[in-house]
Image 1 (cartoon, one colour):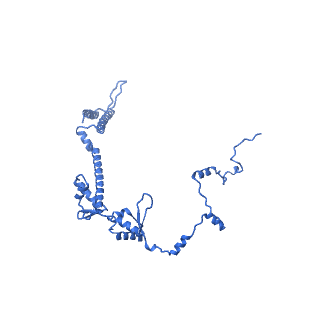
Image 2: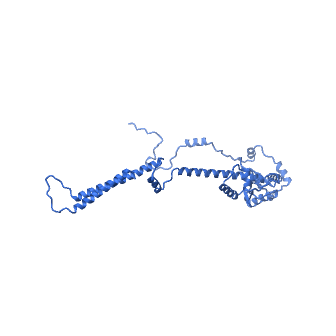
Image 3: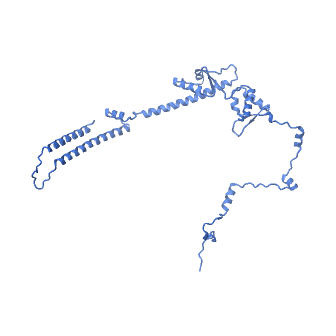
Length: 337
């Protein structure tokens, strides 16, 4: 507590003692009237006591207001970055549950560091999946396809992970749908469990029978290393067909159902090929006394907008019957006498 507050409290105590002594002496005074000189005003003891009590309350309120002003000044100093000193500022910080200086910056730095670590682990997990897929599709039969976590990190990572990061990476790999985890070893797990041409054809046939459509070629090429050659062989044998829906999209493989193939006799094929198409369809129709169908081509957008502007507005319903016989399209001209 500073000197200003101590002085205010001391003054308040002195005034309270004086008020109590005045009240006690008023009880001992006689009740008979006291002669008073003309023009003199006497203040009753009770009024004097109430005045002293009011002054004491005012002094106490002023002292409390001074204390509140001091507290506000200390809070403003703390908000402006000035270090408050002494035990009162420490007690004030503990009572108000205020955050220690620099705590917000420390928390932001911790959050930024956690986000950076998570992003690095995501990129590292992607590199591990790519490495396992490349080893799965390798042409070398003696190449290893199963690796432990330490072996994978030694192959794809250039820095040493902390124990917490190692545990996080292990959980990420175990939950990845493209990785198979058995006995502490990780290996690539393709989306479709096929490994030969017959299995590939059977997969496409099952999709066709279930009405699921086709399968992306890129997904099938990642199943086993000979998938590209088998796809070309099946397409050459007319057992599957490859479609590309739009430009820029991936190719999709479909099963070619042999039940839908119809064998046509060569005689019908020759008759179909010998039919000659007319040079002018309209002339042939008129020769057969038939009228060609006329199709009106739609106009351009500009012509349609121009035709809409030129069309006059037609009034089909009159609400003002007294104006029905008037031509409102003409300018009003006053009648001359």
